[in-house]
Length: 456
Image (cartoon, rainbow, N blue to C red):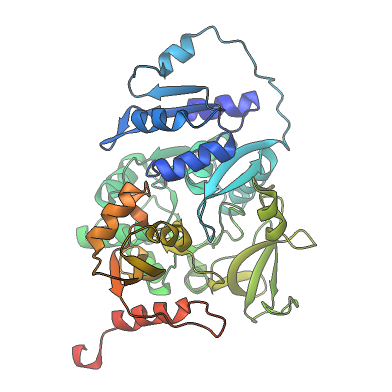
């Protein structure tokens, strides 16, 4: 991955990492929308045959000229070693335009298809330099990266940060908290950036094993709701480590950068960190009026690390206001002058373990299920991942979780999008205009997850 990534950077090509759990539906759309010309795949990974998927998709992708296999060879594909040894012409310019597109990263949000996020060399470098300076990163630091390099977090801090600071990166192919503890000890890890489940499970493992991690000085957590108590508990379990929430996205990688020291623990637990290298506006959702400190509204952001736009110009036009501020779709408020506290989301995207899942995409697929007449997919509380997927279903016959999972697998949707719970109902709560009131459905699930007085 690192070799092909560097080749793209030097040659002025666009790098498009694809999340490995994606299957035909997602990968096919991404390759078609991005007009990919060359695709690098393992022959197989975690029991899945990527070559067969790539070959099947290639027939319908006129731009995709070459499939290159890594970790093995396959008929009809170019092996990675063969590619390196080939006499292909040198098409690298050696002087790529720093404002040209460098990264194309697809993110599933509130639309049924993944959105193609475009970043330049400069927008990514702006983020890296801001993080380096704020956190005081240098050549003596070692970053543990549990997030895949196909996410903006893994891409920046596993593949890029080392070239800016000289720090080392320790990658994990599969998350395991016990292994993470051993890696931290073995390599003298000083910091990590990861989603909520990573911090929770690392903390649990440290506490249960009585482990000491004296080299850890920073853990930045985001991508899913982070309970204040988790931050406090983690800080107690890993003394000397500044642990805090942070807020960002593929479009605007780090609107906030958490806190810098253990003395700011409460700010790290109760806010999403200090706003760095960005301008943030909080506006009234209904009127668009600018709101003052402490008032909750929609979060807008403008800065050098914000994306250039989406591959779809119409989405880009909708995403920015007339002053060039990016509409995050999240709600929050500014506190203590330059800290941001995120309180929720305007739309009903499900954040499962740091992964954004579009309910509409799942609903679109389930509407093709023969027995289902209507469906509403919403987030539900999940102890480990923050949020899970629940499908409220109106159908002519009973439908189980297993039935839906099997069907969505046939539709080519990645497993993490399959509902973990199905609620059979006769009707949905709706507004006067007929829109399903998903907030009511979500509230039902939250209420059911709360312990009753009798159980306390």
